[in-house]
Image 1 (tube, rainbow, N blue to C red):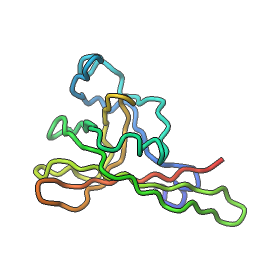
Image 2 (image 1 turned 30 degrees about the horizontal axis):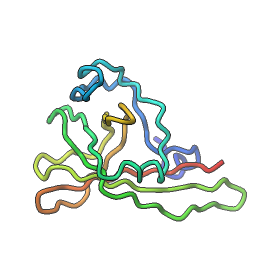
Image 3 (image 1 turned 135 degrees about the vertical axis):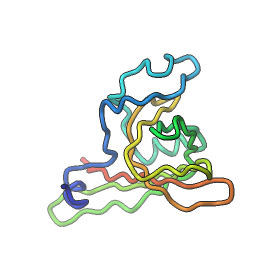
Length: 144
């Protein structure tokens, strides 16, 4: 099993899993649900790119609950850091707000978005608020 430090060294951020075989709701103007392969897409996550998606809806495919709508609420960028002789690492966190009931467990989920398409993301459940629950996704990217 990889340790977090080893994953960071390899430049891991979002762990994309291919072939989850889950369905997302049909997108306006897009293919019908299940019409796309679940292999992910070519979207390159950055903190600035994520900020452009603030307030937008993402669909999470949960095997138990089906399609769950999450809204990207916050992007928190952490200071870039580097050890001596190692490349710098850019880190940022995404916070999604979802419905209060039926919390998603921590894990990899296939997600769908109108602009960037289908991708997989590891979500971590966070605090429960009145009427909603927060979920966090963490990114650690090697800087070239």
